[in-house]
Length: 248
Image (cartoon, rainbow, N blue to C red; front, side):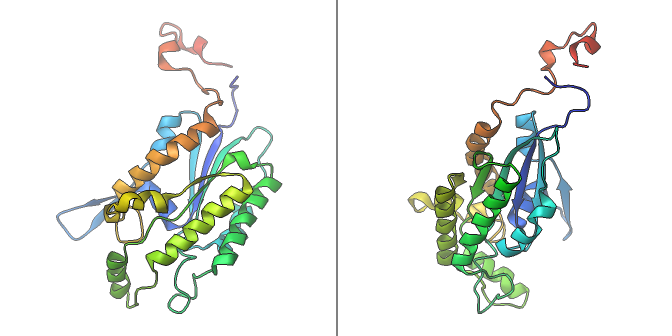
């Protein structure tokens, strides 16, 4: 039963810029400028049971993520409930070492870092059944190369390498006994053209975010289905005496 002062359970999104951009909507205008509007992730409205917190860190790899994780997710307080933590890293780790050594993380180290994230969460009583791992999406090399050239660089990622990191993510999740969404494989199934899922070759487009949401929802429901509604559905509110419908 909800009581005044209770904290809403949290769903935490922890990842790189792909995660960070889940809460950004880009609207092109007639001018060359672009307006970015912040909006709540759709899951927040669908859940109606949790706060959805975005902790996406643009440019971060798993090494940096593991270092800052204790500052991002701390030991839950007495009344605080973590309903789920969604972990999505790999797009930066998979950068080519000879071209982008700053963000690159070797494949074996990437896997160990993901295990480290799970181990830390367990150490603060966020168990495996509350964690969902999401692989990086596939890479559209042609589109991303244009982005790299515009920034004065060469193509610094390959889709074949991204697929290796996605496979490593899936393996870690299986070894740790946690749910995983293999976004990389799903977007490439039956040789489908996945380019429309990406806005610039690397980050998700609006269509890509919708694709992610659709497949993630089933996993997220499993984490939250037993949580009570914190406030009553509107149809259960006494319209003549609404205060009587809300717990003290």
